Figure 1 (tube, helix red, strand yellow):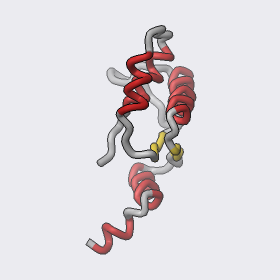
Figure 2 (cartoon, one colour; figure 1 turned 30 degrees about the vertical axis):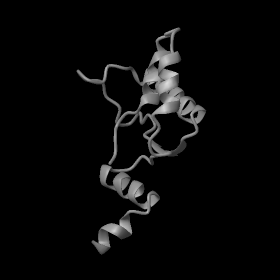
Figure 3 (tube, helix red, strand yellow; figure 1 turned 90 degrees about the vertical axis):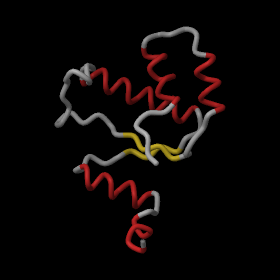
Length: 107
């Protein structure tokens, strides 16, 4: 199973907005852990667009990415940056990194 967001993302956004009371979020980051490997998609200016759901400027997305990296490292996750490739090539990259591509061929 893959998820798009995790509890550490909440701490990242809390820090970005300057929330002073983050103790409960920090506790949740320590207590509710999941897979130790986290894939992060870096900001990619050539394809970046804002819309009704994505309101951050590109500069804000860079700041958010840098904070995400810091938070996930702080809580001991192994980070793997996704290459700037097509969606299918990114998916193959993830499966290869997780050693899942051979399992799919054998099934």
